[in-house]
Amino acid sequence: MSNQKPSIPKGTRDFDPAVMDKRNFILDTIKTVYQNFGFQQLETPAFENLSVLTGKYGEEGDQLMFKVLNNGDYLKKIKEEDIQEGARSLSFKLCDRALRYDLTVPFARFVAMNHNELVMPFKRFQIQPVWRADRPQRGRYREFYQCDADVVGTDSLICEAEIIVMIHDVFKKLNISDYDVKINNRKILSGFAEILNAGDKESDLFVAIDKLDKISIDKVLEELSNKGFDSSSFDKLKEIFSIKGREVISQLTQLFSESEIGMKGVNELQEIINYTKALGLKQVNIKIDTTLARGLSYYTGAIFEVKVNNTPIGSVSGGGRYDNLTALFGLPDMSGVGFSFGVDRLYDVMVELDLFPKEVINGTKILITNFDSESEAHALGLMTQLRKNGISTEIYPVAAKMKKQFNYANKKQIPFVMMVGEDEITSGKYTLKNMKTGEQNTYAIDEIIQTFI
Image 1 (cartoon, rainbow, N blue to C red):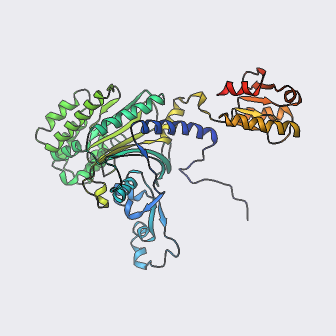
Image 2: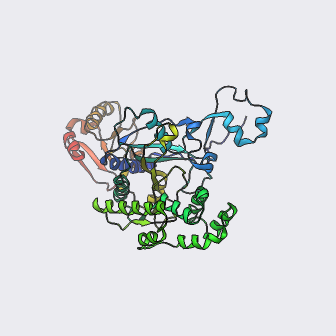
Image 3: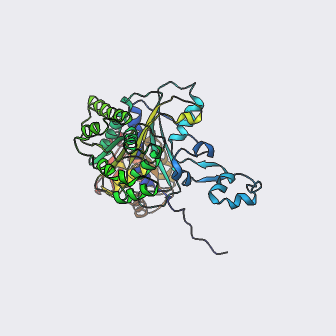
């Protein structure tokens, strides 16, 4: 048997220590902001019962789930007619579980199971990987992390405003300045459907509109025509798509003079913007986008999407208000709103724009040399002192020549080497070499500790 070349599945990645330092910089920044706004951390299992996930993300979402084969003889109950129904139907008979597609639906399941013990409104954040059987491309992976924050148990629009402020706070800490927070409301989209006399085809309209940033208006209209939309309404639809600029609210108010649901969406948008101003946020990055639909079917109110400008990478954050999600699990009347950062896309954006600070590397600060058994024994005690004072330290594990140990420090980007030889042990003064500048001086161990803490 020939040796097989090792590989990993498409759409997944390994993260070496240097990359992990940068990823943790992003994750720690997001976590700090979430906690500052009163959110508490939650984790849920990597896989859920398929019944929990199915039907929550629209038809496309159901197709993109990674399903988990049942244990044991999973073909035992399969009949010939099951096979004839096709692979998609068959997969639901072979699999009772699936890897989670997002963090929101598992969160709704958790709330439904534990609502009697939770303090409402319940504010949670969750930072875990999710899986989607998507076509891999730059900025789109099959395994990726989401960083969710949700509030359930209140319909206050202060929550939407705080989400927008949190997005701005995270980006400020990450030094990202040129971005747009696009905001819309599903009620506005429902108003569009009402105006077009297409109330029974809302879902098709939303899915088509959501593709406007990827395909042309003509292609969207062609898709709607194939879905049974009357082409006589397309002029009105083009007029709707053209609504933008500073006068969006007034244009929408005129448009929805006879649409109660549409007008309610406009009023909610205006109220959210008023709250963000009250929270001290300037409106530079907020853009009302009436063509923003977001594909997930559970949104019922405000929806968000964030794009960093001047990069080829897609949206790095998104979310919205959902009023009925927990009702799917037997808990009605539990309104919630939430959003998520895609840490993988944020990472790609920060690499693209060269935004990571140089000091983000969190590796070893000091390497202690090892020349012989006597210096090794002495160095172990010094290393323990340094570590007890929070200074990341390691010793070269075997006795070796100076050049080899210096090369090791340079390859690992360890900034300082502490030399412990016979003279240093006798004097109690240790030579500390700055590996970047080449400068070296002698210090007592207490002086070295004071320098680094």
